[in-house]
Amino acid sequence: MSESSNHPSARPIPVLEVFGPTIQGEGMAIGRKTMFVRTAGCDYRCSWCDSKFTWDGSAKDEIRMLSADEIVTELFSIGGDTFDHVTISGGNPLLLPQIALLTQRLHEKNIRIAVETQGSRWQDWLVRIDEVTLSPKPPSSGMETDFEALDDIVSRLREASGRRDLCIKIVIFDEDDLTYARGVHKRYPDIPFILQTGNPQVSHESDDHVASLLNRYEWLIGRLSEFADLKDARALPQLHTLVWGNKRGV
Amino acid sequence: MSESSNHPSARPIPVLEVFGPTIQGEGMAIGRKTMFVRTAGCDYRCSWCDSKFTWDGSAKDEIRMLSADEIVTELFSIGGDTFDHVTISGGNPLLLPQIALLTQRLHEKNIRIAVETQGSRWQDWLVRIDEVTLSPKPPSSGMETDFEALDDIVSRLREASGRRDLCIKIVIFDEDDLTYARGVHKRYPDIPFILQTGNPQVSHESDDHVASLLNRYEWLIGRLSEFADLKDARALPQLHTLVWGNKRGV
Ligand code: SF4
Ligand code: SF4
View 1 (cartoon, rainbow over the protein chains, first blue to last red):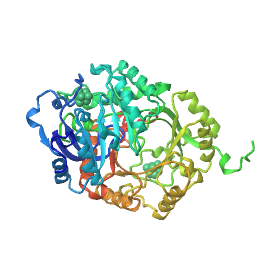
View 2: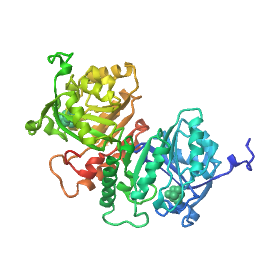
View 3: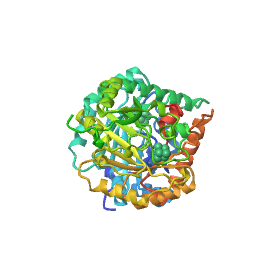
View 4: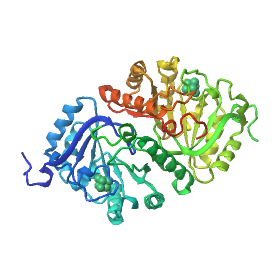
């Protein structure tokens, strides 16, 4: 090994799930065939987090410390030759400098890479990601956005050479979230902007889950329609939640 | 008027619906806020057409012959200053040379324009459309694709100067449709490719419509997952059908 194992980029990655191929159920690549790698750990504690098991300790026995090469091997052993896209999801993958090596290994195999983060932390490897989704958290999450950190991330990505897709995606539960979202869109007007239906049932599953999600989505479409400052926005549900509810690994 | 009213581009446009703002419920701009203009008339007769009223005579009393300026006025009277995107839908808008003038008027107002067509006919104005969706019809439609016409459209769009988004979208009901779709993707491998869940209930509405659409979508995701020749494809449902069923004007 040319890299010392003490070097951050050679550290193993805490992984909770490797699965697919399935579709990306949300955001700018909605519907796109992809594999998922879900990392453990988050610096946030969103009230409605749909991946609490990545940070609340409930799945800590499932966390595997994997090298970049082990992750790549597992992806190809599950997905064979049927995929060309990997989504690195969390938790917040931006806590992990060692993802640099994983992105390098995936690009060597001509795999396109998507990452989603709330935009609270920077890592240099983010400029090498093909599809970056910044998903700052609205008031209903109970979190407070560090706009200095977000500004910094946005300007670093804007200045970085290379081609990448960038979007901002905000989960909307209520009017306060909408007000917050409009402010974010105004702050970064040139970045493609997506409003996403909130999923209020992340820990249980009622019979009318789909109907309630579609009602929320209809409300969101109605609100989107009305605002002159949201001309070029998109409103999207989470397709995987409509199809599979809160089931993991699909 | 500088153009003679006998000139094709000055002819009025047969319009069935002008509505919005709402979301584009399908395809590459899924979720995007848009206004719709639905034109009358189609050269196809797809078995599962969800817009049969555009060509089967059932809505012929609703057809209005509108000039480009009248359509633009109506769009702004309904949508005010809340939109910057118009989808011209049918029927097959490519039957109508006079849409040239409408695209010109909309672009003068900085409106982005999307058009969907099965790809059976060409009009020169198609090169000026910002988002072109070619939607050739699979075997379940009962129609036969004229691949010479489709090849011609694709190569004209490829050669045309200017920036536009182009995608191919194919409705999938069954395995034969999938086989057809894979052939189309192989024929035009560089064009972004979308598989769309078929809606078998276009004229009535059963209680389990949403569940049945989501089951079909889950099946489609499963099939998409398996094919190595569909690495970079997307599978998407029609969001408006999930939210509103077959209701018109939403
Ligand atoms: S940032 Fe994401 S992973 Fe972290 S707590 Fe919030 S929703 Fe959960
Ligand atoms: S091409 Fe479209 S509008 Fe025409 S019959 Fe087929 S589905 Fe209907």
